[in-house]
Length: 290
Image (cartoon, rainbow, N blue to C red; front, top):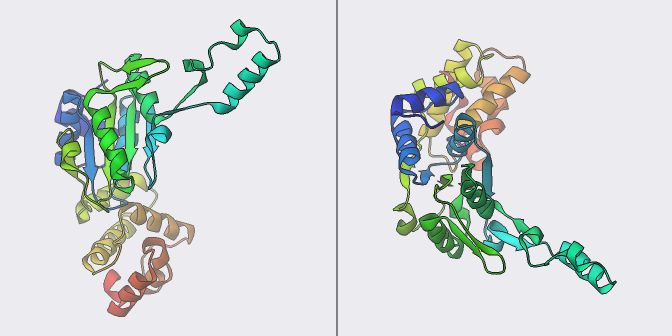
């Protein structure tokens, strides 16, 4: 069931252990009520993909995920023919098999639906799924151009079979880490929201919800250290995912306080580039826990 107000969206997100500010709740509410895709931009690890997962859970809808990458083409995202089954059917026919049993090898039976077609078919059948188009900025501009058309009418035509159209579109979440700019024409079809790194209070709230076994004192120490790390001129500042990883790592080590020595030993949990680790050590790890 779709929440009927911004407050209801915030409550539903909180029930799924997702700590969202009001601006994100407003964007989600508008996307759901207006039937528009939700376009989320932000640095890696700030919780963009998690929004789609949480929406799937709170709406009790199937999550269909398309992970974008360089070289992704329409056939890999939309559909392709099951050539192995088609060849087997042809061999059965050549061996004198029953035509009725084999059927038309260019029918829906021999079609493999990829995420985009699956989402449209599910929505057309009245089962409104959540379609996650993850990290669109990794895909080529040619694929982005096709996606623009799909998001306009949610219609897929398979020339040999039929045209599938969803009168009520799926819930669509598009994410981007902004490694390149997404075309304005696609953004205009979406409700846009930038997810930033959390401030200290929100990061504390996230840790308390996601890692309740961590003491309040350690939660505050970790949140403060992450705020200081992001203030440094790092190549890749750590996101919320790394904060949770850091908390988990300290639990594994049986530690209840973040000391300079412990922070230095576990920098590889939150920083993924040697240059960033060296920069933090040069500035002094003691600063993180002072």
